Image (cartoon, rainbow, N blue to C red; front, side, top):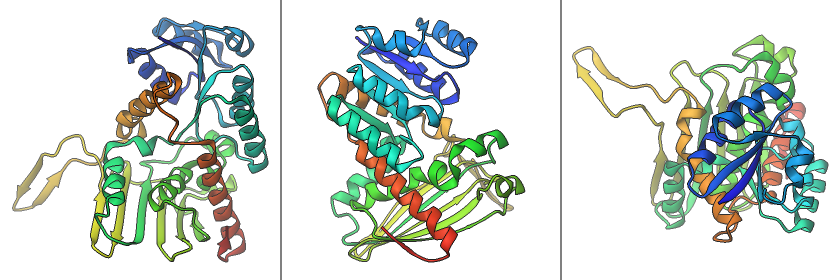
Length: 328
């Protein structure tokens, strides 16, 4: 039984804690959060105990940590856990600063502990099946990749100020998807961005609508489209076009039932948000992490993957500022 300490009792922490509790190979031992009442409530729900960072990491029974706290705490917790000899599961990103990411990754490598970064979309069964077909040559030589990611509604204004912005927070998932599907790091990028959804984004120095085009060394093109508002639901689609055909992974809906009539065809909207859309992916990535902790697998999402996604995000930010392509 793998004993886990979780940092963070918020929205994503609730999901992870529930998955740990439902997994027959792991047990939630401690919950740590700056909000003591939240930590106590989540711990009580799953038979764990609230704790402090120092006490939890000092407990030899704890073999792994799951970091689901605010972004600004990730790097410090990663380093502390690595030095304590614990396996690490951390939600993206490692940090919003590239030098801080590099320093953190160095500590992890020196400690030699398993480290997994939570790019959960790689574990979505639809996207995973698309990539498997892609690797088997289903579309021949890949020529273009198109990734669409649109939130159903803007986040709370307080979130925007600390999130890191659209490119480092929201589109970073898509940058990782692009890297994962392309099998290589793009060499050039051009980004356009606007505030079309809500002026609060502009007031916070952020954007709410963006399109990024990337190019690989061998000329393959990838386009990513993001918006903070899609009135029809959580829009998550991937398309890969190549010399021998096309692969598509579409939106997931509550049912596949549709009504056809003289006035048109009506079907279910996409699932409402990431908590529902990627519920299976969250469970699958936890299973993989436990495999890694038990020595049955090696993390398929390495620290370098987190770094690469942030490098691309920084290039997108720079491209918007300069209004020109940026080489990476």
